[in-house]
Image (tube, rainbow, N blue to C red):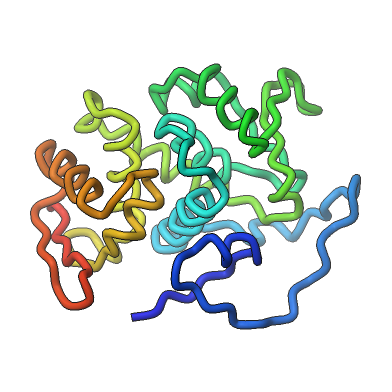
Length: 232
């Protein structure tokens, strides 16, 4: 089974077993260029399926662009910032966002800054705190997908779960096709997006979110994939 994804050359090199399909891509905006605003609603993820696809893309992007040493709290923040980024490369970071994520914000931000992944701005042009993601300048915004991800992470059943378990829960939610319908998950890819060392560790994370009622059951099928049944 092959997955087709739109990624940069650096991400392609970081994904094990990836094969590049050459295409002509639009030129990147010049430094200092302000991205033009599209028509109202252009590029937004309006349907639940589009929001799940946008969350998948954000999870895969952060998995490929973050070092393996980056911790789960920082990874969780990186995924949400990626989904909320504007074409200017700025991603708003209001205090309420960190409360929803239930992570130590200063430590996670410091870790991502040390990795060169983002730059924290205490006061951006719009007056509030934000982070700047230079690699995502010109990328269409996915604010609604970001709100979808925050709702999934704020599920009260995850209240006592750590950042790794909530990353696994977000992965499960993003790869579902329809509520209650079984779907396939690659445990190797799941481990990468959650920053785990092996597929077995990802299955352990699945057991944790299954225990709180977010996943009914799963079993290994052909090619080592997991057939997962979400809780109704």
